[in-house]
Structures are given as structure tokens and as C-alpha cells.
Length: 203
Image 1 (cartoon, rainbow, N blue to C red):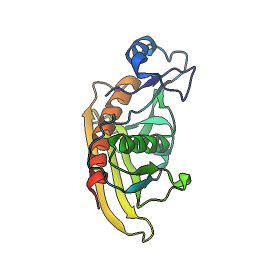
Image 2 (cartoon, rainbow, N blue to C red):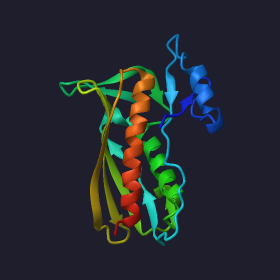
Image 3 (cartoon, helix red, strand yellow):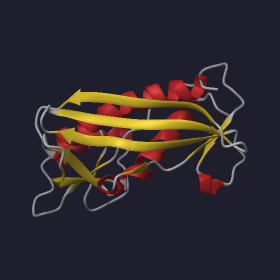
């Protein structure tokens, strides 16, 4: 799944799906003169199914180490040090962007009564809290790595009813902004698919 590439002149606004491929071709050479390319991450497409539950979920913004609180694409060196990849950035702070895509993916599944953010003040049965453990390009293995831990917490009692770690690794041909964003988007897509299935059947 290819991430949306946003025009540097229009930060924070996605391109419509019908124009995406053409826009990628036109914008692929942009970003010169010190202007970074801005990439978005994709939610899972809608696949409504019969037999949904009556549960409501509140999705909290994921937490993570300080480098992952920013909007930059991260490279993990073989020694474990982290650096930012020049020439590319995400469309928003990474935790807020992942939260939005988790919410959209759960909504698109059509299996829950409601999916909301904590600030929406919508009554819920469970809260989904998560931590971004890795969301980077491993330069040693040449892979895009997404590692997300998640917990389902019962509202009211605060009891953890289920917990799991979701991990995906996708090979990247080279470490440049387009390849890195494409690889991380593909890895997140795998994690989102597993996460949505887990939430929809979890108790």
C-alpha cells in the first residue's frame, strides 16, 4: 500500500484517491531546495461485515520515545542509535497520525457501535491504549519496522482485558524518503489488519 504524498505547498491536506498515482508521479521529483516531501499513512479500506458487536471503543493517542513524538521519518542504525531521514516527513505528529488511522480502520471494519477519541466524551466499553515501540527504517537489515504494543482496558473498572504486541517488517530497497515511507506504510497496514481483527474479537 503506497502512502499518500502531500504537496509541500499544501501541508496537512491529502490528495484524493483518484489523483493519487498521477500526483505521486508529478511530485516524486519535488522536495528540492530543502523542502521536504510530506507523506501520509493509509487506513485499512472499508470492508463492512455482518455480525458486528455492540461495543464502543475509545482510542487513545499512542505514546512513544521522544524521537517518535515528532513528524520525522526515523532511521535506526545497527548500534541502536536513532536519526532523522532528511528530505521527508509525516503529515502530522506520528502518534496522532497513527491514532487517526487506527480509528479509521476500526470504523471501516463496520464491526463496532462507535469508535472515538478520549476528548469526544462518547460513552465506551473499552479503551485502546498503545505504545509505539518501533516505527523506523532499520539500516542494518534494510527493513521498515513497525512494532506496536496494545492493551484493551475496560472502562469503569480499569481492568486490562487483553494485551498484545503487533510487529511487521517489510524490506525496503534503499533508504530514501519515498522508499522509507512506502515501506513503513506497508508495515503499518499489516499491523492495522492484525489489530482490527484482535479488537473485533477481543473480550
